[in-house]
Image (tube, rainbow, N blue to C red):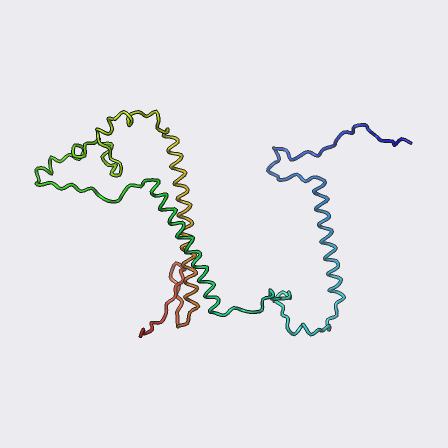
Length: 245
């Protein structure tokens, strides 16, 4: 007997999504979303119902030997250890903090190397000065730096790459067909500046973390110390002076 199959194409009833004019109201819940939310709600409701029943049927006079070695907090929740009952000694904790501090210090040195490399790539202006000595005051009054360096007024302040007039007159320097457009150069330089700023921020954070870890390691050492707090809320410690033999 042939199988009766209904091959007529049915119309698909699709649920619409949230309209653009109502996007500020958030996600439009579909029926499948409602089903998942309802199932989750009823599952939690049944779990709470079972727990309430167990709490109601519990014997208040119940006792077992593990009660003597267990503790509860202020909310009545059971406090359990994580399984590693072997607590570390003070020397072991200081050793771990030293290793962590060495790792942070290594990462900070790495960031500083990246900063030095980027500063060289960006060709920052040098902080030095070019001093020219003259014989007398008359020569000083007639001194012309543009004529002395044989350059143009625009190139005078470029101490790192001050080109002379002869170099500027060369054809390969005057031909700008092979030069990169100014907009591309500005974008490339801006990208390098942003990257350098990220390295500076990371280096500052690592420096702060390293200082805090060193402070914690010093606090764990023996010796009388006094905690002080300034007007800005910064915490500092002062140790008692000890005579060194």
